[in-house]
Image 1 (cartoon, rainbow, N blue to C red):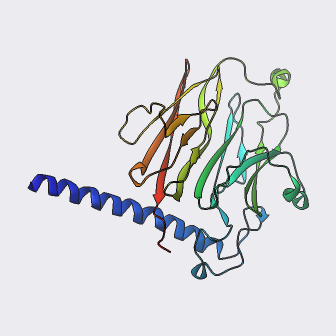
Image 2 (spheres, rainbow, N blue to C red; image 1 turned 60 degrees about the vertical axis):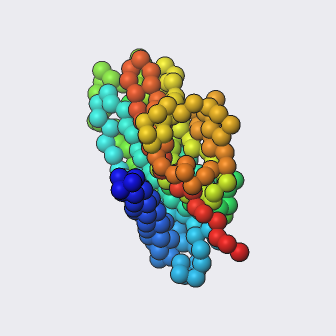
Image 3 (cartoon, rainbow, N blue to C red; image 1 turned 90 degrees about the horizontal axis):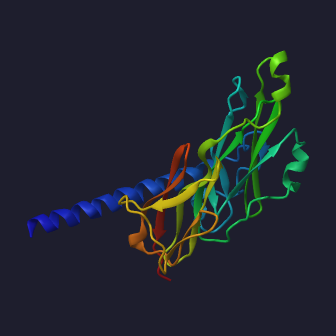
Length: 274
């Protein structure tokens, strides 16, 4: 009996710690947006209201959780990866634009990411742009984050190594041969109300195509059932999430060259009593 009570106490303490950590991350993000700063290279990074006067579920907001570097140097014969993380209300999306783009045109760029409609969600998204060829000249890569009517952006300039005559013929051509998987789009944190349907993305860059599967926080393979389904895209659909679904979900991508993995922490939020 004493052992059972100890186990229950430990579980309660663990859940409380997870709840506190998740809420702290959301609170810190909202306080940062209230500062009214720019989103990297520009963009509206605030919501025009004091964060103490509203709930994070009541209005659109978005901020950079991790900005991409301002510049990178491509090593000879090596691909380049540029990472960008945003956090915001609903389900923010991230896309990349290649080439210099006037700031006045950022908002008019059409999104190439299908956005999931979930007004009660708070999500942290990570996106990686992979340059799998040698550049012939410096190029600008802009990370654009969106949610609702909010847009933020930040740019990276990638410089190639000095020209070498023997490599001119391979400039701007994809590197030959197979490539190990790289998960390039996933969510690091997803909060939503209990009984909501959520989709955890897992986009992969690989050659040949990678096999994608998911594991739960206990390290067990997720088998499709009436509430959990792996979509053809590799994304994981969780239907009618419950409090007991809280935890880390790991996407694993694998091909003959190797594997990559990424974790998403799902936090179901109990609905407030009216």
